[in-house]
Image (cartoon, rainbow, N blue to C red; front, side, top):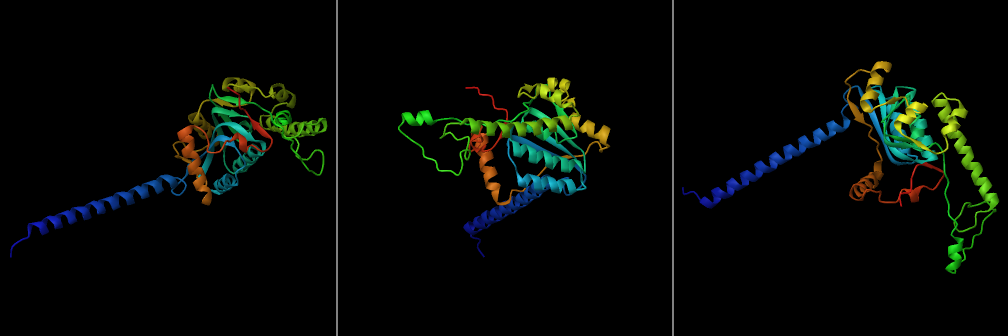
Length: 307
């Protein structure tokens, strides 16, 4: 029987395609397995140290709080390292994360490692740790709170625009850029800022075991280098993650050589927002939505103006 050369060539091509797709499927499957293993390594397969990264502007985050609650109850997590590189954020955001870290600290050691910046609410977060490590050049401190507004009524008047406001009382919606900042509104706002400032000072005094008057001596909003913070008692050591691990081993009996695994925060249906935001940030160096515009409450944030 004669052999059709064209048929032989077609069979060989089909065989090569089948081999290609089989190999591709195997490689893809192996990649998925390795990715899952990398994601859940330690959390599912043995004892480890967890690492929580705190960066950008700090907001109250219930998903992060849930992740930390689960971490506190996970016996495989021997300790938590909190890597902080943030200028601060909302007062409530710093307060909430501080409280979450103290819950974790009731079950296992927590150590904070300060990066390039850990100021204002970010320093408040660091106070939730049992031990604070900073780089020599870390910008930290900036103990204080701020509420900002602007009176644009003069500009609106020049443009022929007259805003009208109907409200239940004279201090409702104050401060408000569409209304003059009245003396009564200023007094009420200053009282809120002073109360929150007092909370911050008391927290520093308690956690750093300092006299309150000493804390007030440098709680004027100024920032410090890591070395200055060390001399002033705001941090415990100079170094990085290696020093944090050494402290865990030498003072808390944590096994040397444990893997460090990043805390996985499950945002569920909101994961798309994080992916889009991080992608834009990598492309343009900023968030998709202006972080400063989202700060709609009293904030504790170090944001020098370089303009």
